[in-house]
Amino acid sequence: MSSIFSIFKRGLQKSTTSISRSLAAAFSGVKGWDQDTYDELENALIAADFGVKAATRIVAAIRDRYERGQIQTTADITEIACADIVAVLGRNRRPINFAASGPTVILMVGVNGSGKTTTIGKLTWHWKQQGRKVMLAACDTFRAAASEQLKLWGKRTDSPVIASRHGADPSAVAFDAVQSAQARNADILFIDTAGRQHTHKGLMDELAKMRRTVDKVSPGAPHEVWLTVDASLGSNAINQAREFTRTAGVTGLVLTKLDGTGKGGMAAAIQEEFDLPVFFVGLGEQPDDLQPFDPELYARALFGRE
Image (cartoon, rainbow, N blue to C red):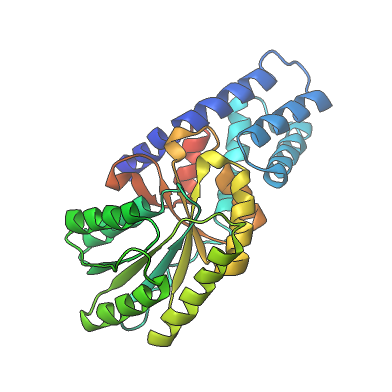
């Protein structure tokens, strides 16, 4: 567990530093806390993209305990904030919906540059380490580089990749991929889709079509629809998640690029906004830096608590 915590700690270092400095600035040398002190703390949490709802709740909890004489040090503050974030992040936790029989089909969606294809590669590596047979479907037929990138991950993880010609119908590729995964007795099939802005109606409608097509081959599929969210976007990712959820039926989230941002609080903000579990978090470049989401490890690392 300690080695996993070190990955969370390293990956969230920028966020931890930002939050620690903000807490120190708000409370260092303050003899008596007043409304300005609480406002400063709330602003600091919002700046780390905890979102208004989570920030307001954390500050209210701190204020209540301070007024009851239960807070003496900054460490007391971080303990309260940490516990509150664990509760928020753990609210929607559930197991991954693996298929009872046949391949589990996971549809990966997200905007351009959110790390979708790389996430698929790392997840493939993750489950191959557990002895599962994984297949990949290159359904981003608009961008040749995406298909090539997926094939590289297929070669790296020794996993079959189903692909087609440039410009082919993505739903047709998905159809063939599910049939192939069934025939080869695969455990998991990842369907990589074209990156798209959440405002592009035509491409968003295509995702809905792909879902219907996959369900025809394997009733109940896709079993999961995961949205990759670039954590460096902070609160802007909320708008993306809202539209993708409406159109693509998102069932869970993968937060990427957390190591490069000070906006680690976004995991809490997105939980407050949607009843969607976070399944994995990207905390670095290496395959094992993509970790199953653990609310307690995440919160402890975020607030610098060992």
